[in-house]
Image (cartoon, rainbow, N blue to C red; front, top):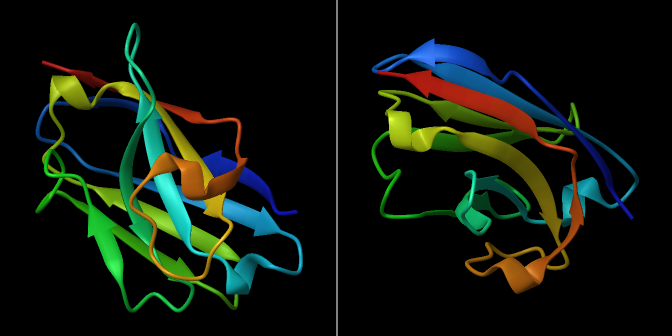
Length: 124
């Protein structure tokens, strides 16, 4: 099992940027695909982006393509989410998650471990 701790959220104006980090502990981190989800008030949790075990393959939801970038540093057991050109509709709690597989995941059912989340609030 992988334990995950997110950081880097905050309050930012529209058009601004943030870098979210997810520190993982556990021996299997390097074998797992990772992902970032978000959940806005009153909405279901949605998969935003994911990355395969070695960082060579990624997936992005249409709503964030061109604005969000996922990356990972297996030597540091950390996955990152660079978010740019933020919009008020990006306001949500962002969660890091570990997949049961090594290949990039495109559905939430593949994810088995979750962090506690970090709040991102975008003001207009």
